Length: 140
Figure 1 (cartoon, rainbow, N blue to C red):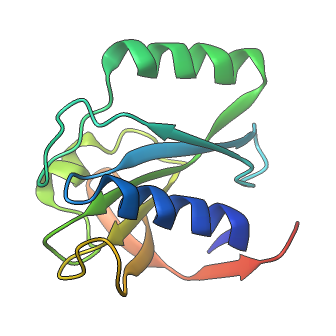
Figure 2: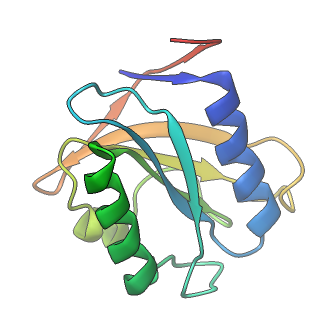
Figure 3: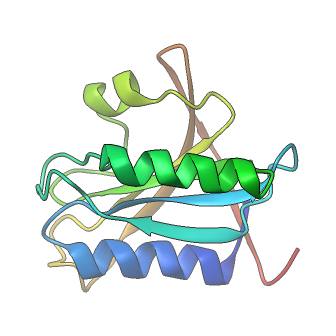
């Protein structure tokens, strides 16, 4: 189960809406070994595409160095789908290389980024996708 604060949830959704019609992407880092998402890190979709996202390799390298320096890890890796449901695509599954992370997808399909949305979380390990419950809390 992904337990996440309402504030972080809302920041992820706001980023998805802001970048619509392109896919948004980012990370929520947390203290290593805690499975507690704390630090929201929106990233630039280097692909600038409504159907694909890609982290800029330089930005990603900097992020991992920064997380290492802060004794953090990527607890949540998120992106949005702008034209399909919030479920990992084959490409998403092939790029999922953080077995301990929660992969969050936000769908802004058919909303122009403003209306209802789907917010779903998955574990993706060795190509196997498992949906998990999301629990919103006010604080940890």
